[in-house]
Image (cartoon, rainbow, N blue to C red; front, side, top):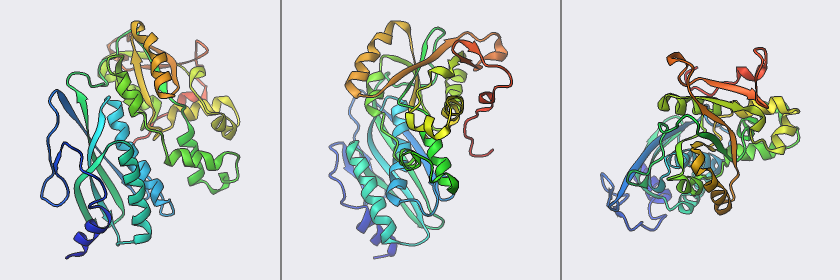
Length: 332
């Protein structure tokens, strides 16, 4: 048996009980699944690469959690329930000390979400992990980026900025001694799942996206797809006590919250007549849902997707450093 098949047999095969809708998983050229009637399949692919998404010294368990959670977050953004995933893993060598904690963490998170590994590929080369994830959503009930309407309220889940602050600690050794540095690094690698919130937002939210490239950039995708504009009040952004302490003052923490990528929180919009339902969602999930602004009419066709930032209801001054906040782009 070749090294590749030994690798699959040792680390990935027979690690999970088959879901009822999985007919054939690992071991054939393709997996076979039988999705239930009345559902659509949501599919997403994400890749994490050594040197871009994590450093060589990163805990492999943390890498696995972050990599798979980024895919789970894409399902949450669509209101889909996780079902199956496949993985393409490229390794410089077979390293038990790395693979064992990686696989243990990956299967733990998968099992928590009812996700089954149904296939993939392993190759030799620079370390990278690609997941393709599939989930189920009742037909016609998927959350999308294109449904926001003028007058809708804009909300976010959880708190913003912790992941960016944690990444700063990872990349800048002089920040390691700052208060809450360890906690913020932990939050960078271990974002919380928002699947439970997203499932309950079906029929409530008019649009939704997960915050992977920063609030400014990702809300911009909703605005563009929905042909609307928005006003966001930075004083309303939900900030943890730890990120405020780490940044040293509120204004800097607000800037971090606007640009922080890999948060994997949700940004969504809700019409006025559905806002009363959010209290029950909070109660059922224990997740904080925070109002941060409104969807407004574009001033002209050139202002579609324009995002105006306010502070306590007043437009920010042109020299305010927070106006420089941008999201993450892989190629810039």
